[in-house]
Image (cartoon, rainbow, N blue to C red; front, side, top):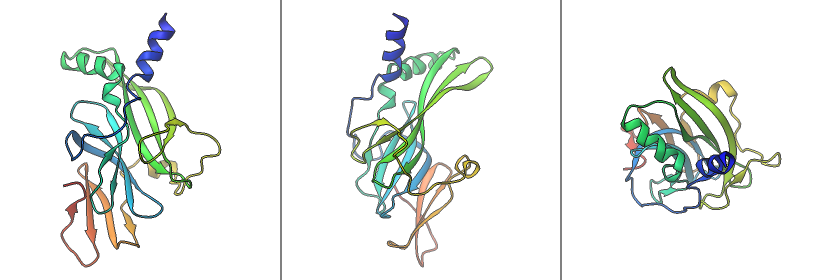
Length: 193
């Protein structure tokens, strides 16, 4: 019985595909990666409702799409309930470190954290890939090759600015907001208005 409960806790909420449109619900961007064709940005963002999810957006700021729905997992619903009451001893799911595969899929890490009286600790990390349309989420395999591989130390730091040669745009993360700066411009603008 405990195994069934844990499975529902862990996998709940991953069946929903799509997005709500617009920026609604995006709290703060955690990290990002530019696609190999330089036309898309995959990023993870914390939600105002809790948890973090994987999103994509065009380099022009259009076609924002949410790929995952972690706040619908039973685990994150319970976490929000406990958090509102300032209780401890619960688990939560968050996603981070998006990266593009050479086949056009997006890889990411799904982390389960334990929120206890001494702080927060990682319980497990699992790696998955998903299609850019939000379908076909599956565990990462040895055949998944990544377009850009960062050294471990660098990938744990604030994402470095990325430059699109094709579109002559610099993309960077500052204060949990994605910014773009076109060649010749001096004032950056938000990628997701």
